[in-house]
Amino acid sequence: DAAVTQKPRYLIKMKGQEAEMKCIPEKGHTAVFWYQQKQSKELKFLIYFQNQQPLDQIDMVKERFSAVCPSSSLCSLGIRTCEAEDSALYLCSSSQWGRGSDYTFGSGTRLLVI
Amino acid sequence: GDQVEQSPSALSLHEGTGSALRCNFTTTMRAVQWFQQNSRGSLINLFYLASGTKENGRLKSTFNSKESYSTLHIRDAQLEDSGTYFCAAEQQGTGSKLSFGKGAKLTVSP
Image 1 (cartoon, each protein chain N blue to C red):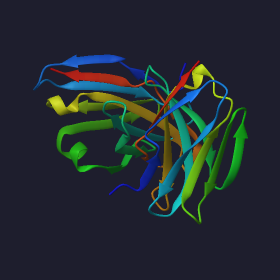
Image 2 (image 1 turned 90 degrees about the vertical axis):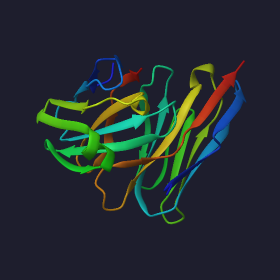
Image 3 (image 1 turned 180 degrees about the vertical axis):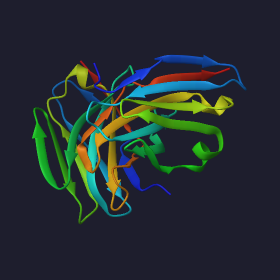
């Protein structure tokens, strides 16, 4: 089992609905990352937290997503209004900041927007 | 633009044979990681390199930061090696954010 836990495993939403997925980073890791992967292609960086503070995010996240880490042991990624193009595998990873060797991924949340 | 160029995009091997995957970087990277993604979507961390070569069983990876490339060699391929392999690199000055290659789908057949 991955040391990073993601829930739910699968998520189905209608267009226009809100979606939320959660990530429990590996214990002791202070950096949390979210990536989006469509059709098993390359992972697209979405947002990065360090010590629960967002340090970097792409424009799409700023405009349509909501991402927070209310504690060191829980982060969430939300989509305010789901669109078909949001259908993807959302992967959360964590690391000790500055130490890429501790980069651990969760199993992902697979979102389908219909 | 794409900072990580991965090739080939697909590869077929017979059991017992080997090959190599390669990633070229268009900008200076401070470290590279290689992952295997299984059929369930889980990413398994294979290697992390800031430089040089690492070997683990039938896998070996090299990162040449000066010439901006990294390779992953697979020898004596087994059926369970099938999956998609990604390289990902940390750009200088961006913390630990990774830029991923497009992946290489490896199929190992009997």
